Length: 195
Image (cartoon, rainbow, N blue to C red; front, side):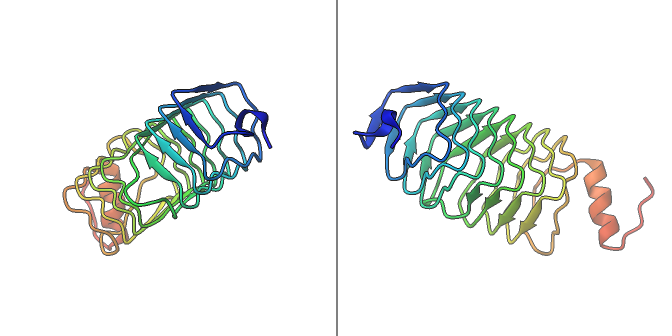
């Protein structure tokens, strides 16, 4: 057991910095208003953990197990979350991602309304039956990202790169896309454009 978590299951208003917690088991623990700065958590087990009003800054959570995680008011800034499976989060998570690498991550049937994915690398990320209404993907790279059965009504895709969505398989009304994306989608459906 990692000494910092050995004898406690609950942490309030604590700051964790510059720790190597690779493959650590911090499952079923609760963190309230905690900050994690430059903490290495690749392959860590976060299953059943609860994070409320927490900040992860410059952390590596690649391939962390996130089954049944509760996340309310959690922000990730400049973090690596490659290959994380977010498909079994507890209901109604509240997350924000800025300048993060989420390559190969998976999001399932969670309500991520108004979630910020700003300036993120979302290459080959899967969104399956995810509610992303009013989400903000401004300036993110969505090359190869897959959206199936998602609700992206009024979502913001301004300045995104590599973004494609099939309007026949997703709810897209009011989503804001750039001209290049509109042309790509129109062409995929057999339209010819004059642009």
